[in-house]
Image 1 (cartoon, one colour):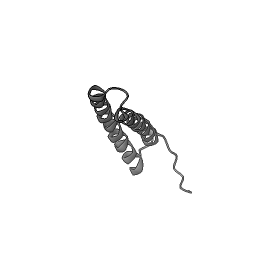
Image 2 (cartoon, one colour; image 1 turned 90 degrees about the vertical axis):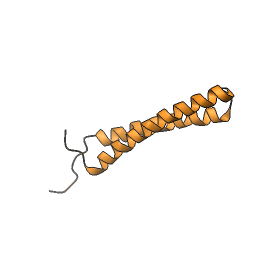
Image 3 (cartoon, one colour; image 1 turned 120 degrees about the horizontal axis):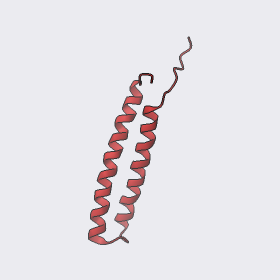
Image 4 (cartoon, one colour; image 1 turned 135 degrees about the horizontal axis):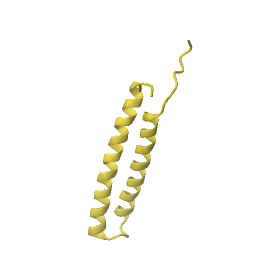
Length: 74
C-alpha cells in the first residue's frame, strides 16, 4: 500500500476519536436508561449519538485507509 498523506493520517486519528465518543455515548445511554427508562428523550438522544459517532468513525476510517492515487501532473 502507498504511504498515507498527512490528511489521511489525521482522518484515521479522528476516526478513533469518534469510536471513543461512541463508547462514551453507549455508557451515557445505558446510564439514562437505568435512571429514567427507555422512553426518556435522553435515551433517544444518546442512541442517536451512538449511530452518528459509529457511522462517522467508519467513514473517516475508510477515507484514511483508502489507496488514493497521486493526482499530480507529471
